[in-house]
Amino acid sequence: MTLPLFDPPSSFDRASLAQRLQELRGENIWIGTSSWKYEGWLGQIYSRERYLSRGRFSLKRFEAECLAEYAETFPIVCGDFSFYQFPSADYWRKLFTSAPPSLRFSLKVPEEVTCEVFPKHPRYGPRAGVRNPAYLDADALCALFLEPLAPYAAQLAPLIFEFGSRIAPPFEFLDRLDPFLEALPGTFQYAVEVRNRDFLVPRYFESLRAHRAAHVFNAWTRMPALGEQMAISAAFTADFTVTRALLRSGRAYEDAVAMFNPYDQIRDENPDARESLRALIRRMREERRAAYIYVNNRLEGNAPDTIRAVVDS
Image 1 (cartoon, rainbow, N blue to C red):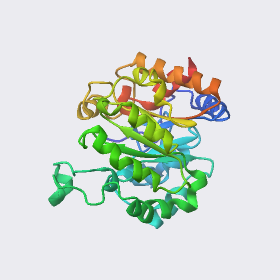
Image 2 (cartoon, rainbow, N blue to C red; image 1 turned 180 degrees about the vertical axis):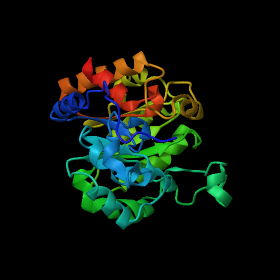
Image 3 (cartoon, helix red, strand yellow; image 1 turned 90 degrees about the horizontal axis):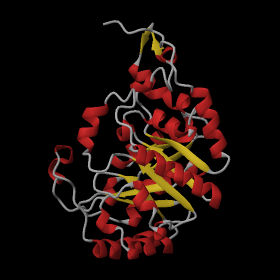
């Protein structure tokens, strides 16, 4: 099958969305997506003709260069890729020079530090099911992640620590989290994402507040809905907020992938999540508090359209 060299006319008003997001950025409300290399966004956020090689669409060129075009619409992006590795200094250099300096990045901290026991999954090889000796090791994090990032600190939004549902009971976890956060340098802002409602206890929020770290309001399978989390007054633990609209509550990640791929359109509207995001934006504007909001394709099927629906209302 021969693919068209140019995209058909789109009803998606990219310029209008870009303008609205820049206006919100001026109020310290930063809205972007989780990751950015999606072919399903061609004709919407991306222009196919920018990625031609010898007259054909080049996926390699698209993945290497599309971040610059992404930045023409969005002021910020959340990088999930860093969860799976400690990127090299050369990788960081190429990443931060591939987009304009105005683009901000939130990065997920590698699971090499946040995973207590490696999941029993083929990609972990012989480490599957084994306890992680570097779990919450602040020295390893500083040497392998934070120090290489230091030259790009001005382009960074909060760094995100994601802790899955397979971790120690809440108080055991918090006994280790406290000294870990205490040991981190003040160069960066930090946010903590737990994915189990059992961890939303007063001591968890107190710990984050003591270390000026934000709780990540996250829409996830086993978490309360965004609105329910935002109704917890103690959950606003820092002078900034971080929100990740990832999945409909109760829906498995794998089911969302099968349902929404290739992420080229909204397939399952989530009115409650949209209204929660709007309410958060209103509150943060009133309180003049910075907000970092990231929408994933797997929430409704197409993150740019979800964002457009949220900010246009």
